[in-house]
Image 1 (spheres, one colour):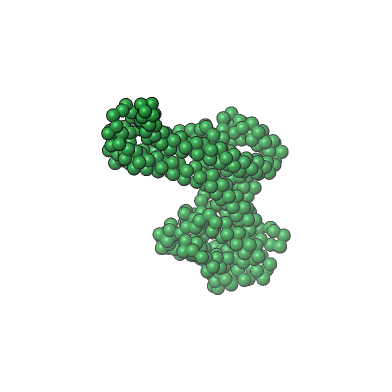
Image 2 (cartoon, rainbow, N blue to C red; image 1 turned 135 degrees about the horizontal axis):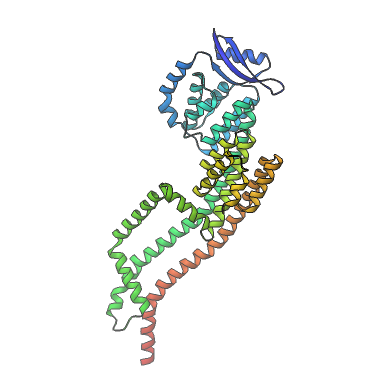
Length: 412
């Protein structure tokens, strides 16, 4: 007979905590169900050593446990549904492990089950799987455990992950077209300069005529590229590696993110994306009961932009000494007046999370509109750029031929 500490919800939704004697965890859960209680958390009273041993054995497996964002949405929704239906956390996770379709998802669920059997609560168990659950996810689960509204919190988490993933897909789709088009332009240019133009060099050298300046320059560039293509590839790889190293530093990341917020055309889009992510993350955490200081820490870590992160960190210090959140945000150049004024109203009226959700919805719509307009703007620009390069090469080749034909015509 063992002792189990539990937290459960009664029929009115009130959280009830206590201890129960049972042969095992399943019997304890069954007894609580007979008392019309929904188990939120259950910990074995004397499982400390077992818990530590479990963590020691599973540390390597837990670190490898991972899942993609779509799997995470499905996992969160199903876990919320099963807990809401009265199943215990352990039973729910065992079901999810059995029906997992990928090795990563199965490993994640099995790691969580083993941690729960060892006496951990869900948020602690999730912290052992950093590739599957980020800080925001774990903090919201912890808030759900404290409030006794785990199923509600998980439903909000699923909504948040789904909305964030939709925004990510929109951005990825918008960036894919220009990147592919740019690669095609560079490939066509390299083919023309290395494969087509050199074939005309001997023909032009055999002609007893002065070549146009454009033709001379194109031939010279083609010859240089053909003789230095290894150097060009090396310089390109070096430039990419240098950029990655520069961006991995704190100062480099800040300077790059600052540039991305001010860049022509893309700057407006990047700012709207940052504001949408900030608002949705903030609203979700506040509504789930995460304390304001913890919320600001998580928002700063998950903002995806070092400039926004810096502003939020400064705002956190201002809030710590008793100031309103809207004050430091309004003094920054990142947050527009509309956002800071709505946050100020939310603080005064106690409806901060509702107004933040409205801001997130507004900027989600703005991002979609900006992506559509950007795509329609980039397409003609890339076509013009490609046409200009091809036209320049073709013109450089045909100018000498047209000049010779003209001379022959005048001489006859």
